[in-house]
Length: 228
Image (cartoon, rainbow, N blue to C red; front, side):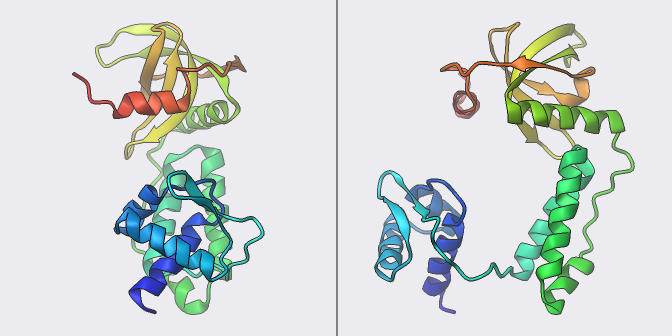
């Protein structure tokens, strides 16, 4: 398959099952210019691939689109397996179960030559040293983020100061053997990051409102803004 034909197929795959994806994002993933993406998307549309959207707004594949079944390369299978093993070891019980189930389904659909890639993968993520109480906190926070529920907990910061917090959890961040939760803190009336390992027992409470300036997008903008 030529490099361009491969790129066209990848664009269609990247748009599969997603909402709007900008040309800039596709360009970064494919390591080409946005102009190249615009040209490729136009060619795909002219060839009959039902891509919706327009330049400057974003693209998505129509729900009625029918693409060939996914075919994973050895590198893609390795990446999926490593990610699943990390989630299984360092995530909560829900993430661990989902990772095991997903990996089993992927393996079941693979031909023998691809399945052996998963079976021989010599990358391990031990979980015997992960505390069960920690995994339970990850699970509780994951549910709270997903269902937009306030959480309450005791917290000990890096300086040893103890406080009790009520926060609106917006997202979980995995740093490699370390989880944090990004949230709107009622005590500080601002965004804060909390190291889950420093949190006491997590109590999940009532729903929190959708308030402009306190959403995940606002938190992400704050994180990406260089401090002065």
